[in-house]
Image (spheres, rainbow, N blue to C red):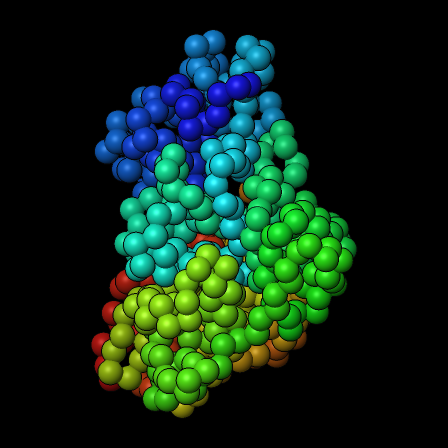
Length: 463
């Protein structure tokens, strides 16, 4: 097809209610394209945002009549199945069908592409880079997996921006394209922030999973750069400098000090730069972002100037409420490496306070008995460690039943508290003594609708 996505004007998005897909719909609509979409379920905030733009489907569900021969292309989200009736209709009509990463690549063929990959830290590193570029009024496009403060959309596609910053997820591209998303972007500058086995339903062994990052590393082109966590043993296995025409750049945690619960970066000139994020994993994220920004012509002093106002990505160690003697944070952490990094960072930042930390097992991998042993000793940092899961989620994901005793054994922590009822969990937390104590809630879900704002108010009200 001669035309590129930037010139395509009539587009239909299958599974438009997804987090990134509805943002793509809004970005395309903003650019002037005629956009329609469909989904079998659409929740907030996607529902309200699509409605405000006049893009909310008239009814939920799939209807082949939504797909007509006069469409320029169809974009299919991962939520759809391979036998989706609208997808089958598009194939029958011979329409161009894009996955999300295919479309982003086609739309950015003439741009410099920076792709941030890794099992953890992707969103934070991408967010840091976007924050710095915006601070210095640089023109750029982007695709990121979280809502960022100061950015109304998670996707921006223009004809004029010379670069695009992409969060490079390793999960599958679409129901009919089993390649990892980050293989399709064809980066010029690539980042691998860390490798820790995940997505067991797609990559059944650690070797299978790691191989996807090796492919990504080997895709770095002539005169390109590969920026990687030099202390991660799994990353070291895939970033061996094999191409003399590629610049390999390793990084570690940024030098820093912690004073009264506040983190300061130490520059080469012995200056102290206050930052609003904390933890070794975030200090590594800052180093990665600094190396990318250096490749894009941002000098050190300009990077530090911008970084002081960075508050973090949504749900990545995000402050919910602060009291005189306690803090409540929430975090997206769920994979073992993310859990360990977040809980450890929080305890190190406030060593004099008791830490109560709660993890919800919500993803396919985290609820899989074969994967659970990966959590051994990843939850040792909190003073009180709590794990929650809903047995009905196991049924929905067609996984075998899981006993609380199995979970406790997998974490190898004898005093681990395990709950399967969100009301019982809330009651347990409310009974804790919150004087000089912090609460950390970690999940990619919602603890089955637990009212975190109300809980945080009770925790921080003072005793």
